[in-house]
Image (cartoon, rainbow, N blue to C red; front, side, top):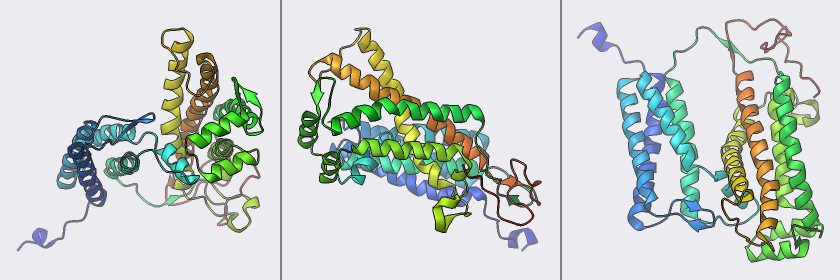
Length: 357
């Protein structure tokens, strides 16, 4: 037996990622087949269930991912396979749309509209991460060690974008607080809005907050703004002084990025496409349904307020998340950059100095 034959094959970086993604692809294919064969909808089209036949699309997507991951595991990283994995990740991201809505309803003690659809959203979101990780695993490793970069703020244009995302929520917050405090907007009083919430089956926690003059979506908007600024300011990379027990520690990379990506993937298309529909309704090209409001014009007014906030914030969140990812990538090299440089991670062996804001 030759030395080459005795030598154990060194596992490729794509092996582990490829096998994990292969398991996910098999599970996703099974989910699609189960939905299609049983007639169970895996998608929600607004309040109504989507056609069960879309389960075949889920199964086909899972089957394509299975074949691609099997090829990656067997052949190793190839440029065409990496391109295919990224394309599959993009398609899977579409299937994960509205995962954020499922998370929000569960946070406030409500049941989701459809558990099969929620399972599809969650499994698809996991697939996006796994497919992307498998595509990136084929990149050649960097030589030497890496050092974490010095906490830095995003460029000024991105901070102005964060300002726009914050300001865009102000009309939405004012509208929601007005109803929560008993005021009237778009022909609907606060009492009527509360009755609508009860009729729609919102949780007791949601109703309790409204009785205190708070709206749950306003609290979520505040958390969203906090996340947005954490992505563009240095305190989003290293816990600042006011976090007491955590101060000075580096923020886990995925802690802000995971909710940011989920939020951007939901709010950006929802807001942009919704604004397009509002523009068509304003031009009388399509008809806006009245819903729970006195007139279609009232519904359109509320839609403009809400969807404008989602669209502008979604764009700002996507840009901020990309900036955060670029600014927090480890710096290759055996030694840390010079102190004070934008990419330096240490200063004379001491923890990085974190700006106060």
